[in-house]
Length: 314
Image 1 (cartoon, one colour):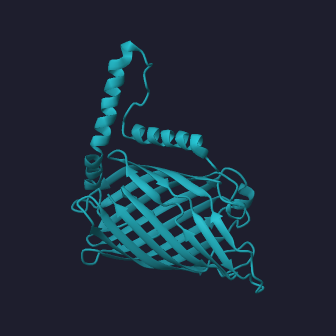
Image 2 (image 1 turned 90 degrees about the vertical axis):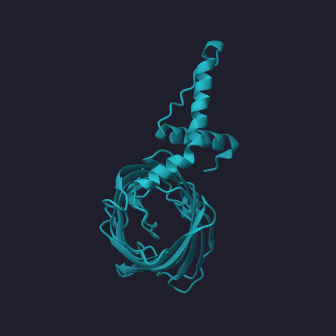
Image 3 (image 1 turned 60 degrees about the vertical axis):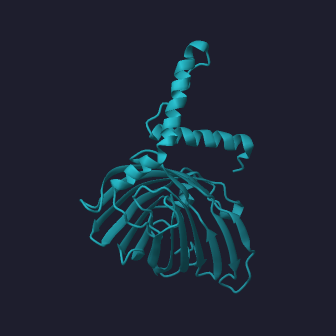
């Protein structure tokens, strides 16, 4: 999907409208008449106040939730304000290797004390290797489908010095913008419920999500995805963890199949770069533990992967 300049403007305006609406602001602009100029001025002042209080609003949102680190794979239910970039180096049972740059990560913004939006970067894949018959495959490099926006509502939370938990819901939207060999050809919606509970230095964070393609469901299939991360806080900046990542295919070409990954990893941070800027990085190794590899339909999607993450919180 090539937006062009005009399309990009429309997307940007729509995104700001969602953000401001989540913040409780009325963006309905009055007619441009002399009588309405005081109303227009008041609306402009309200927008100025909204942006001027952005940092304070984010601080209040963080103060009412735990201070855990975000896991490597499991998307946290915590509200975050950051720029995140991830990379994965995957090896599949058919002999191919894929370098996946980002994919569903990007810019997270706290737009009210209980709302967050994410503007994600498009995923870029580089695939090389040989097929199961030892024949070289045509290399693939290009953009995959783009999970471009996530709209998040925190339902309940409590900081670590109180009940130490979080419960959040969101909707992520993925556009079929990938090149021909990397696209599903369908708009996809991912409604998700995220949760977390802490006990001192230990916490559990998890998600339960649906993957609902708007087309080609007889091939792509509807999916249920669950992620569970067990994390422990060691010293000021170390967060060792183990994650279990499970996908069930309800129908489609993989109908009735499951795939399960086990992911041990370590997240390190947050390091203060300035009063308002903090840096975090991490790495892990993900292995498919079920099912045994089958070539068609290829399951699991890959056998193992090295995972890397970097985040700048502000």
